[in-house]
Amino acid sequence: DGGLDKTTSLAHQSSYDNATYENWHVWYRPKSGGWSTEIQEDGTNTVLFLNASWVCQSVKITANTTYTLRFKAKNASADLNISASLRNLNGFDTTLINKTSATITAGQDWTEYTVVFEIGELLEGVTDYALGLYRGSNGSVLIDDISFKETKYTITATAEEGGTVSVSKNIAKPGETVAFTATPNTNYEFDGWYLGETQVSSESEYQVIVSADISLTAKFIYVDPDELLYD
Image (cartoon, rainbow, N blue to C red; front, side):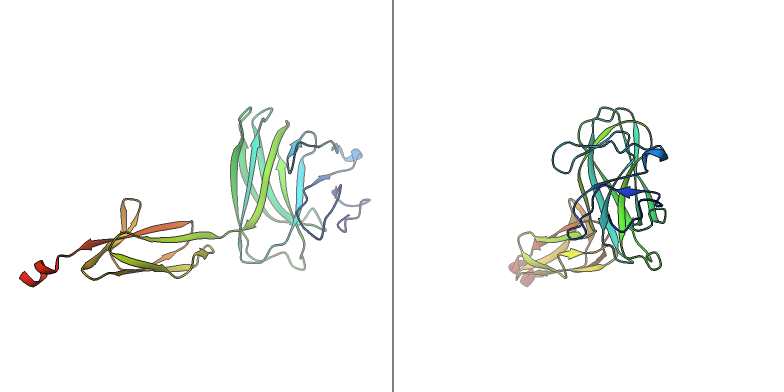
């Protein structure tokens, strides 16, 4: 049961998988506490909030690391606020961080929501955490495709005709610095680094602090050698 005392805890869970940390569970107060245990599954990894207010998953987290929570929602019976939190798995009343994640519009089709958790120091003495989605108002909603992963961004560099490029790393964490390097071929000059049609740098060696996926293109200009000799 995840180490929770079912006679004294503020909440307890219906099942627990300590080995894989993959199964989502219902957390609830006992019937006397006013919460029903009623919750249903609708397909793989899909949960339907009815009278139960929480679904939670045990997670492993590291201090001073950024994580991204993603989930999809649809068919809300009313406009609902869904919030997320990280709590002490073995003392559910102790919260590490709360996030207001999304307002779900009544009747909408599948829509993806993203919440970023910037973790600082962990709770003293706490190693096991529960990631919870909380329905903050009455109503039902389908929640699906829930994922919680350390935030990492994809870094790509592309060269147009006239040169080659390299990047110091292809996967980076938030706050890391990546270096882009462009090398023109013979009879070409470097024109600049472009994000779409916008030039972001005219320097062949360009550094960026990562806060999102980055895809830059290096452009080169052909230089006629005969014109150089004439000059």
